[in-house]
Length: 472
RNA sequence: GUCCCCAUCGACUAGUGGUUAGGUCACGGGCCUUUCAAGCCCGUAGCAGGGGUUCAAAUCCCCUUGGGGACACCA
Image (cartoon, rainbow, N blue to C red):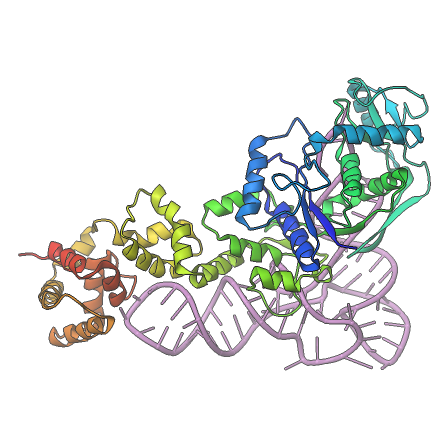
């Protein structure tokens, strides 16, 4: 049987790297097995639903090149893929569960529930609900605004399941409460919608975050109620912040949209996230999508939560920045220059600058400040001015202006020769030559090699920059 | 508090009874070099603790400790 997996996010916020990592694992698994990757939108929480979040989510997946075989915009024979459009289906199954005695209507008010929870606090075997309506035989309809439908959890016994990477996990039924499956607004809870959809969409493997383990007992019970065999469960370790607590806002960026904004490359983020909790079991780290698809396996998934290490991300992104096609990087960098209001119409010059700047930065957000000296009119502080005005410096500038005017075309070799000649003829030490010259051309003591600067600026610009600083 | 999950360098990980415990990031040192990056080389650093099982345990079992997650008409 062909593998079918799904990524089922809830559009309630910006796409979190933890969720995206789950998407990556599912996608990789589907592609590796030649199976189907489904995108299903779990929008049953109307309070927290956000249209922007949905858009950001789909944009994020597209940015990372994660395509879905079935889902919004793509269609598929098991749709619709928005849970909000499947209410009649959940109602049908909920009614069936009630009819078969697996569930019941409950008319307890939120106030009463709160009181019950308070009174149960501290008790040893405290479940959240006291089963007040369990045997009242209340009649109703899923749409009734004053009733919910609850699942009738067996009072004793154990419920267990076999996790693919953790083995057998079991729960005491008496610790589970009669959880809600249809809310008073007629929408299903995650538990019901999830199980019904996975069953109807013929999902074979559920790969989801670790935090779902404790709910899985309920899900197993639901499958039993439906008379179905549950799919394979694969619970993924979660991603932690540097302080080892669940990765969240206070650890800095958590949304992939933010990473895009900071100038991380999708290729890198995909690679990095894939390696968080998964290993190809050899020493490879930098891998293409195809290589990851080729070597992906559930057996390579770790059961340990992993810390999101920004420093390693930076290293990896720098690597991608330097090794990917120049045209591509230049294209990705454009928005950063546009935002800074820098004119990059001279495409050849622009690309030379990118080629220089890209190997000195961890992400594209730094590319503007790195290459800015090539665009703006240089300014100097008093210390720098003093060096510029020194006799030795002035002699260098004059010598270069004169030499450069002799011909129009200068190769890298020519410039290197000129550098050597200058040092000899003007009888200077290395630093006495390089510092003033680089300062004049690049505005800083530190920076690119002289031939690199020359190559980017071109002869005329170099001459112009020198002449501006010459005392006549 | 209750239930569940987890435990190899600071971080990501390889390791499935016999290894000098390997790789990567970070860190330290060196090389290259006019400088800053990049690159290359070398190095520091780890099996949480305690009991078993076994000729042999990072690997299997138990306990302790530590960390994490879940306990909603949210997912």
